[in-house]
Length: 66
Image (cartoon, rainbow, N blue to C red):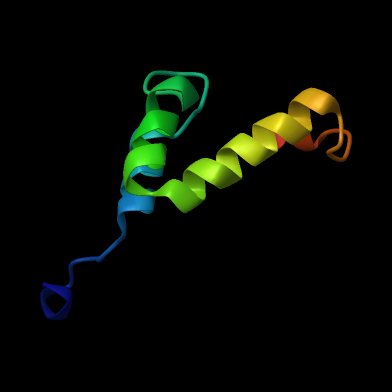
């Protein structure tokens, strides 16, 4: 397929493309359980970022990026 010009991508890219915006469906609440099951390293990363945003240990303004 790659030789025919298809852009090969991974599961994480496909899920993020379907999400596009964490405020709309499917949002973080829908996708995080999927990450926990199939891509646990991304689930840990997302939950760590949520924890940092919640307790204020991220750089001001960074919360609006995710």
